[in-house]
Image (cartoon, rainbow, N blue to C red):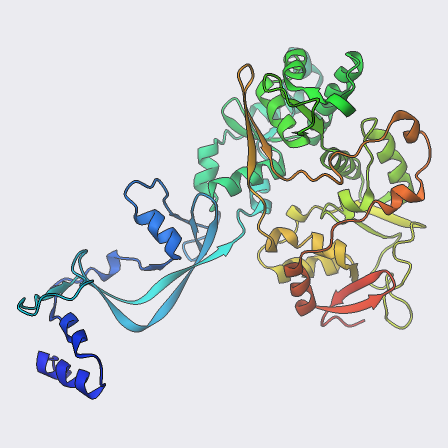
Length: 490
């Protein structure tokens, strides 16, 4: 049986270890309560900044613990703050930690004349919880949850007679509020708002709805038709939000209009649209072209690439320039393959990737959204992608992994209009693709080499390339790096 340490024993230990004698002032006797409360305490390791914010009595910041949606009690645990989400991992301590009441810890040397006071140990902990930043929520699970709450636009009596099935489905939609989804999905508030914008989940009359892409396209077309009717030079002056909502409020719910404008349009700091009384916005070409392209691909399993590009170009609003790589194939939204693709169509007789993969002849394109792929681990998503194709160019493959590796930009630009109320614009607009327009005459001519050269996506993030290099086999060809499954048999 272990003998208790007396003060004399501790002083002898200090002398043996040649420690500063002044440290002996912090030696205190301890007592253990009869009923330890170890199970009632959880010990977390957090960074100093977060610890100061949480412990500040005037701070409203809290950390909420949540488990995975649809999982049993053995699933993973997440700690959700306002801006970030952390996965919680239990780790053993090197020594048993003694938890004592607040204020019992000595921070300064007591006077020599003061007798040491014993402290009562309330709990023992041999493990603690680490917080590891992670990306949440699962877009795949959130989308699946919202499939029963689709929104096809306002329906009147005539619409219900013509489309009774859509009307019945919309009436039977699950009524999920923002609070319901906040409680169900483990993520921060900002990350959940980003996921709503990413999946086009809008708040309609107090309930969250997954908006049908056909309806989104119809609203955007109505906005451009309105500009044509009113002879607005939107390329220079943009669209007046007040005028758009005022003219379309009888066709579409104003609150839904504002949310659509917030995603597919964005204000710009130009001399012609800096009025504080009436905000003007410009169409985000990349988002609108991407929406139209995805909807065209959703009606068929596979589309001839040349035919698709012609239809896509004719379908987007006049003045917008669709770009295959920037908007679809290198954005985690679509996959380009060869007609009759199989596991060996992308390889030559020597087992090396064909150098003419980018040649449009006999190529097809199909819809492949990143949020529809497995997201448990990076390995599971890579496995699903290599089942689709044995070889992938770096930019195309990396675009499907960004969701799992790179934290999204959840910041927003807020604008308060005294007439139509607050507006929110996600701060993800970029200048090279979002606000690039063409005039009517240029749009009548076939694509030139210049326009093709501008369809160059940004390089893959370094963190994603590092993961690909570790998990995949890399082959360098004239067009760049090609990735294949590391242990695949070719």
